[in-house]
Length: 141
Image 1 (cartoon, rainbow, N blue to C red):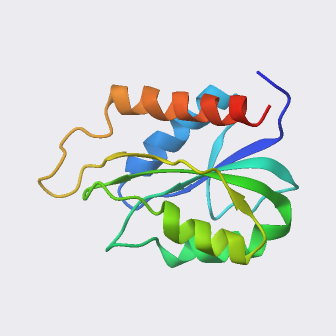
Image 2 (cartoon, rainbow, N blue to C red):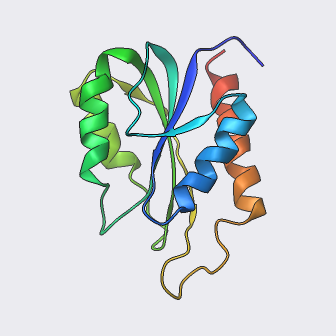
């Protein structure tokens, strides 16, 4: 593991994104915190969990990014979605408005919602998001 200052934050209504965040944090040797926990200091890489809700992201993500912009080097986005879509484009636009770079790829997997995607994210999804996080770290070497 390279010595990179990193943090994992997430917003999760149903628990799907929290599961993914915990997997990222475990792979990075750190802990996952809700976006209610602001960053203590600068981070090179912020792994940000934000799932798709009604075609977009929860407004608290915007507040978190704006309030922590001066502490974030780059955002690596992950999340789940019942529709299969990602917030990468929308969050990238917001981040760039706040002077933050965004890793060009995101990890998105199906998330359980109502009768869709039962038992997701599953163990394969959790390993996939951990691998995504390791790939982000390796790409930033």
